[in-house]
Amino acid sequence: MFQLSIKFRNFADHLSKKIFSMERTKYIFVTGGVTSSLGKGIISSSLAKLLQSRGFTVTIQKLDPYINIDPGTLNPYEHGECYVTEDGAETDLDLGHYERFSNTLTSQANNVTTGRIYQSVINKERKGEYLGSTVQVVPHITDEIKRCVKLLGHTGKYDFVITEIGGTVGDIESLPFVEAIRQLRWEMPQDSLVIHLTLVPYLSAAQELKTKPTQHSVKSLQEQGVQPDIIVCRCEKHLTTSIKSKIALFCNVEKTSVIECIDADSIYDVPVLMMNEGLDKEVLRKTNMPINTEVNLDNWMNFLQHLHNPAHEITVGLVGKYVELKDAYKSIREAFIHGGVANETKVHIKSIHSEYVTKENVSEMLANVDGVLVAPGFGNRGIEGKIIAAEYARTNNIPFMGICLGMQCAVVEFARNVLGYADAHSREMDSDTKHPVIDIMAEQKNIVNMGGTMRLGAYPCRLDESSKLYQAYGSTLISERHRHRYEFNNEYIEEFEKHGMKMVGINPDTNLVEAVELENHPWYIAAQYHPEYKSTVANPHPMFVGFVAAMLKYSGK
Ligand code: GLN
Image 1 (cartoon, helix red, strand yellow):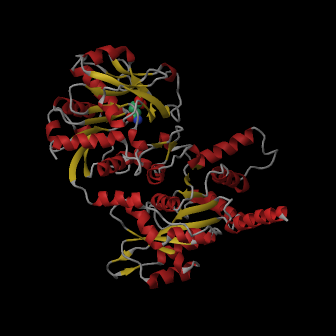
Image 2 (image 1 turned 135 degrees about the vertical axis):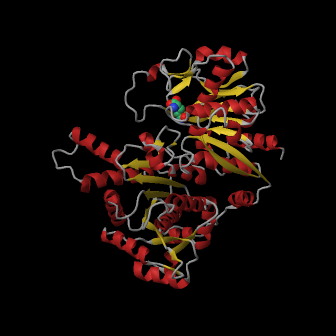
Image 3 (image 1 turned 30 degrees about the vertical axis):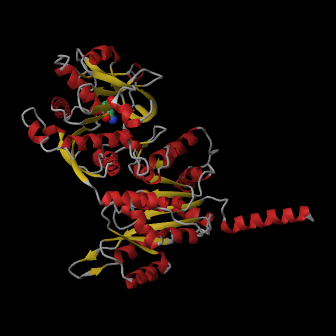
């Protein structure tokens, strides 16, 4: 009898799990229509945040339809910043949003391009794995896409895998991805759904919101065999009930599945907008997941409260060669928001184009800033302006932060103007310099390929306990992400330290210099690593928090 009741209980458990399909990962696909740049990444991140705040585990993946293997070799003018994960993947900047919102790490598996899909299919073909069959887009390319999607689900770590498809429905290059979604929806009708993000424009002449572009883009999806389950409408005016009904009617979705996404002051407001519109509930309902969980956004709301009501305002000068492009320094801009909120401060970013900074105009260019950040980068263009900006911050006691190339500029500047080596440079910019204070590592010397060959991903770093950097982190052993080829030349360590530039962060395994700091300066810190990649809403990065605090002090606020 006892045995039987246990058996029954197990069966009942199994049944209820089956009913809620709890043991299976749910796959959510996010497509976009009408135009690009509607914010699929922010919608995906916001949904992840909401599901996570109900206790579910979520990961987000981006499928990019371009042929590059990864965005590592892409010029920032093309796709903005290249974001680097812990495992050293060079990825789309949307992965930065995923991490900043969800505070969960991503990896190479979270960003797959058409190039990577084809590369792996072609490799398999060369190995003879297709046993003589003709290799085709369907099923071989689509199978590989499906494998990449399920890979994250099969880790068993996630209740939800959200897969964002780059580009816009109807693009030639996204066809295989949409076809793969069609097949996956067919294979897993209970465990997957499609969210389509479109634009509902407001025509001021007609004083009307227009649904036709949404209807057309849904039609284009339907022509490819995919019926969206939820339609998220990006708009600048609120959708009326009749507009929602119209979209529902024409696009074959329930009225509750038409979700308004109105323009917001900050991307960080979007999870709250989506919660109010019930996006997370709709997703749970349609994937047969329990809705009896509560959204807990207390910490997020607290962040928003400080974000929208800052006690102070300061301005940082961002010196770089891509400053006119908002997306080129995305993670740095976001890290200033997080570091600002931690100090109850709004950080204004003054963009300073390094190509135009000269000795003569630097005081004018950097007038009224409370701190200077010299940005990462590659190549010679604008390099002298960055060096001049670093010198100006050093000699005028202005708080300074250098990131990657920014640190290398600070080092070159110090070598030229304090150590007196007029020709000092990085080997990247001047291969014949007599004083290569920044040099290429021996193991990098013979590399000819450009893609994926830098020092990439997370490396440990030991901090000097007497440094300001240590004060910022509050711990000796840190780990930060890298993306560069050149390094501080250790032959110069002693000379730099004797004259006041201290090597405060050292890689314990390789002795590479990871961070430097000036002794007689209120706050002048530069790092070979990229702190901006690890700043999230939940964990604002200590270096940015410390830098903002130093700028506040400098500004006398
Ligand atoms: N160009 C420099 C190097 O390769 C710095 C790179 C960067 O700033 N990310 O070392």
